[in-house]
Length: 437
Ligand SMILES: NC(=O)c1ccc[n+]([C@@H]2O[C@H](COP(=O)([O-])OP(=O)(O)OC[C@H]3O[C@@H](n4cnc5c(N)ncnc54)[C@H](O)[C@@H]3O)[C@@H](O)[C@H]2O)c1
View 1 (cartoon, rainbow, N blue to C red):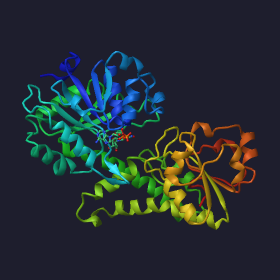
View 2 (cartoon, rainbow, N blue to C red):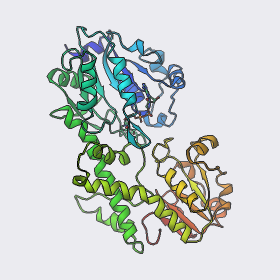
View 3 (cartoon, rainbow, N blue to C red):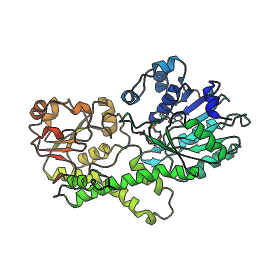
View 4 (tube, rainbow, N blue to C red):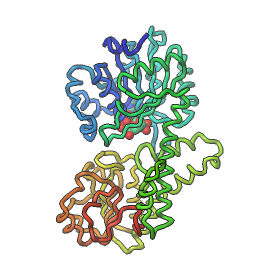
């Protein structure tokens, strides 16, 4: 049976488990193609918003470039907090998009809870449902957790349940880097799962790459990110090893070589994916010495906040303003943001720290980093040192106002170049340039 045709017939639907960045975007892109999607989430607030046509993640509005109201109104997009609605035979496809980490470590409780729900489906359905895992998995998790779990629930993979691993690569900041346009790797457990996954994914994804098995597609995600983790960390190590040289400029020019990319030194690698990748891989390796490069990467990356705090303290600064809690510009995501350990290290050094991020309330900021917030730009005057950790558009103010409010500032460290264009005088440094640290 062609699952694409079945879905397009509107008799069948897609279930999406977890309606965060990944799950919600899956629902939105498939429902835009007139496929009925129902998302389940444990967060009732999100459900309510989705069902009233409001994006629970407001920062995605620009990325999508369209409203979800019409999709909700026309019944293509719906969310629920009752998982039972998703385990009927109407649901041919089950995308899994729940978190797979907790406190920076692989964590599979939500995955197993979702599988437990899916396993309650009728295992004699005419068209066996397919599970497509979009969440990031550590290598071997399918073999060690998913398949044995399904077996314990009396589901035969490849027979009465189909399975594929198709990790995501979206970059929720740039509109073009989305489910439609990005190259998508997928791998399955058997022939039927492979065919069905191709049928389903090709409704939305334009560039599909078939891996020879689910084990390969599962590893691709962690390995591609581990490469980036190592590259970013090498840039950081170089700037620590040569603090009197402009390593940022060196790396920019190194990147002019046809097969080398430019990586900028900075406050460390943040976000859901990059800093976790090396840990995901190491969590499945018996002899850690065989991957000592990844071990060193984690050690150096985790140490960046201490290096920076030490250097700021040595420069004699006392009151530091941090701009940005998100790990990336114009996104409200603080998960594994390197700002969190940086604030902790600065405070440990006895420095007074306050943080401003236009995307977070005072309460949210206090919960994440246990410091007060300040008024921007008026209260920049309070600080003798500033760390601009992201380039939120709202940090772009007039040069005159910025100069007036930073006149007491003796050091500005800018991670993403948010204030580069201003040519500020008060010891302004892009991370990685000469004597930034
Ligand atoms: N955000 C990204 O840029 C990105 C990119 C590629 C891959 N990923 C991976 O995709 C997965 C999801 O990431 P995200 O960014 O969408 O996370 P998210 O935190 O935005 O969303 C996860 C959603 O799952 C819900 N949830 C938690 N436990 C649940 C359960 N037991 N049942 C149902 N729902 C549950 C949460 O309430 C939340 O709404 C992760 O594995 C992540 O590593 C994320």
